Length: 386
Ligand code: AMP
Image 1 (spheres, rainbow, N blue to C red):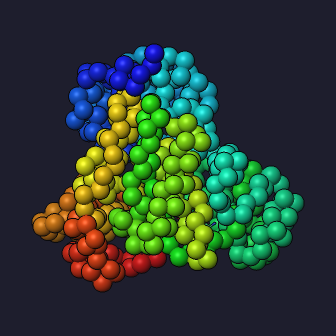
Image 2: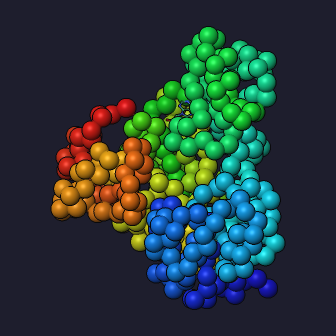
Image 3: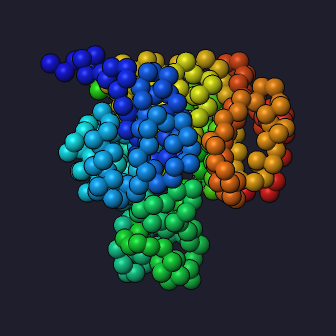
């Protein structure tokens, strides 16, 4: 009998996390709070996660010997990023439980596989076409009309690896610039706003979804998250229901971020999924009884998943690059801004250095004007809105 409680890892077990970034750091801190030891696989001994972990394997996640050594040192393997090779995933799974399962990472690390899976599960998506060659791009343009978005299938994040095409004149250059092929062409969604939902699923099949939130980007990087999303409550529930359907269709054990567009015509369309903690879930660290990182670790460790209860409304603001970090001395002295820094030594442009949360009583999330006031020194970031 594999009752969930029997399967739960006892305190003192070692949770292996592939990746050394801030998501690994905050997962490791949550693991420590539950009495687990976090063991990080990273190529950088000074990485954000390595700084707070109880053990580190230094090496490349593409190196089979490194993966083998890492797996032998841990009780369960999870990830803070998706891009471990298929061979690497198999190697890990041969020696330890891997949560979420490698098959889920293989779907989420390839936009085409992801779209095929989601379409097969009847999840609403913007129209899309695989683009294997130049002729397929012409056919996609003919079917989608302009503008449309051309994206790489792998390694795209924060708007990297994609172009918006406004007319046929740009097709040759975009096809040549985006690699590797195949690519995917997507209808351009005229959206009212961008939403996301964090959903967790435990070993026993329990599913917990956090409230739907709204996201604003600057220069293609997440800037602000508003929790809950200031949209029609029915729409917010529909977004949660879609996220839950995806988690169940995947047979997820772990945590999943689901990004959606609320289209101008009122339809919800899923943009992409990420089977790990997500930047748009950082608000949960201060506004929920159990945050996304603890939920992630609980799922991975086979513990019971508690309800994803939100006790406050929240605003999350990312601290990105040297401009935001120049404001840090004022941010940390502002009452009510709850700081989370990632321990990165160098504030390069576009680099996520940390975030702050600001809480409001439930129902008290302010409108645009009040949000600026609530951000204090961060209200007027250098560079302005993109
Ligand atoms: P992605 O890397 O797919 O998450 O895309 C990054 C951002 O580009 C999204 O958050 C949107 O703001 C924008 N975007 C991506 N795909 C589309 C689309 N099909 N239509 C309109 N905007 C898009």
